Length: 226
Image (cartoon, rainbow, N blue to C red; front, side):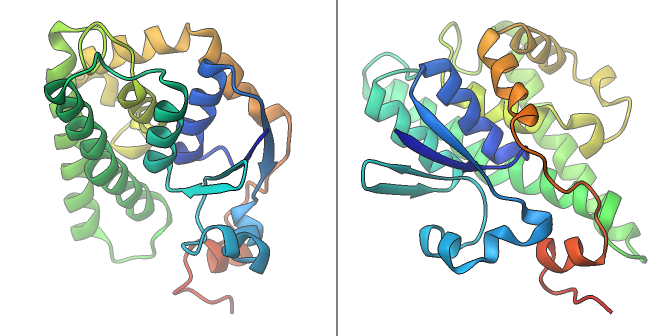
């Protein structure tokens, strides 16, 4: 059985969706990052970056959500494009676009919009712009296809879904107004039973929700509680 170390943040939810779509047997193990579970020696030994998610699969440990998606897809042979170098190149290009662009810019936009102390006008402008630009590229990509790689549902769509759930929180409350194709994609994703099961993980375990001084000290290590 796969051990899945998670919380409800975008990156773990990508993996939760794969596990539910694939039907793999797994044990969900909560890592409460606002309480500092990710910095405990036992977890840090699995993931030296002290982030979620991580999986353990029959003696194999994998961390980083996109690495996990690739590992599980190759293990099961599911949610990959048709064989061929060109199709794999397209998969990797868009998966890394989510990994190195959408995720980091979304995360920084959230941090500076909602959590960073003042003054923050410049970083907010910078990261909201870049997040909006990246989601705009995706919106254009989805203009003439149901999924990121066309007619085939793949791990790229799962990776995108993890972050795109947060678009109004990342960019602005009205963000869906200028991302109609991404909104259509997300509405279709919400109808998938596996998405609904992944979202139901929130009912299995409770996580700290307050971003107080203790939580900030664990989430933002450069900040120490007074």
